[in-house]
Image (tube, rainbow, N blue to C red):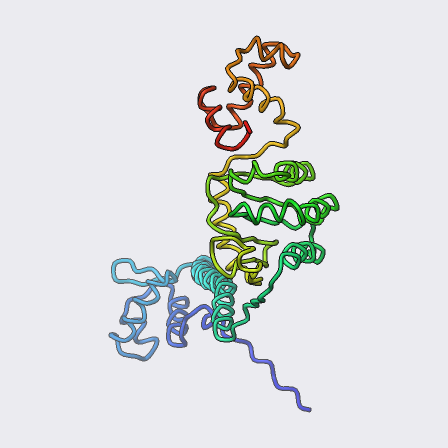
Length: 338
């Protein structure tokens, strides 16, 4: 195979000068200082055309014009300026390329969203039964790549809460103890007085969960980790009334929306303390509701008056009350005084 001769590119052309400009610049270098007429004669061209080319060289900064005469700048300085300007343009072009590359990720997301819209990849599974509901949570937690899985859920009614406390709370408590999941649950205030409910919620808290209460919870729903959500077949009402029919939805969009709703409800809800920490508070509130003063309460409980007052302060903080009377009203509303 014959080797092709290697052709060197014109450095002036590389820097943006066309052949005519390059030839004229060489003529200015040779004459060092000349008028337009002199350069037109040297280039064997019309004065007007050479004048326009000289104006371009002056703008490029490689030739200076002084009192009608043109002289070349030192080649190192002249070409250095041209090179610097070219590098600036290349840097700006590089920034634009980087910006375009940076936008590709967003464009890919848009493309995927459009494809998902057309292809319908959202996985929705209809399920029925309380056993399936509570056991599926543990099953999802077992498959979680980075345990513990965070479970956010709400309970809207007394019947669902009773079923949970009697049959299924132990399942979640055990999963928490095994570090498979972490539960955050919002319950209606009225459910705290149901038999066995407060004790199970205390066990849930002591095993690592968090419980808060609201006057009214709008509906049951849950999110299990970042990719799974649970929705009732009928929003609001009691799950048992609909045979625990629910949907498992595998899409981050639904998980994100329900997570935002949960955080909004969570911010309004009141934290629940375990029974063992709250026993002293409940005792002083119940005795105060019977009309007993601090001294009498202290004698009845075998503690100091200072301890009684500290427990009142804890109760007011827990209940968000501004006075003992307000604390008593709120405690009665929550069923603490029963």
